[in-house]
Image (cartoon, rainbow, N blue to C red; front, top):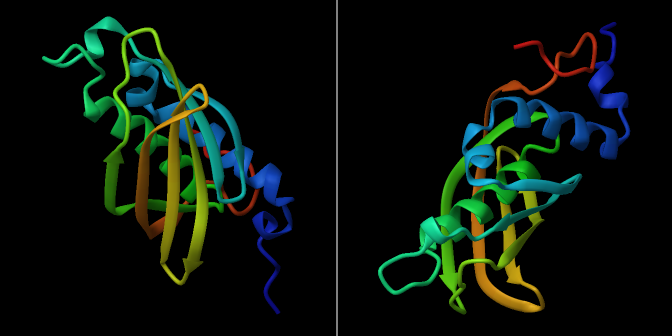
Length: 157
């Protein structure tokens, strides 16, 4: 008889936070852009980013790539909250309103479906009460776990 994986015994909220902690150790992209993790839970994540002057495009508004990156990062934390290494398979974004420098954006990712190796996540990006973008990401689990099964703690890097 095989011993049950200790990770399976973790409270889902504790597991989600441990996974986020592991990801944050290596996530240089979000650190460079000043993206902050506000909250993570099973299949959910909230991240924020303040739009800096150097993020403006030729129209004087936030370049869509930065908004996409914020949404993609929220998607990544949400879909990796279950302990398995998971990557984006397909993503799409719809920009709703322009954003100017100085605005603080909040991206809220929510799991809509997870079956087998695939998942679907929706991310709403807001500036205050205004929705500025909607993002949908399709995830795919890949080999490996974020936590070591024998200790149920973040892997040492």
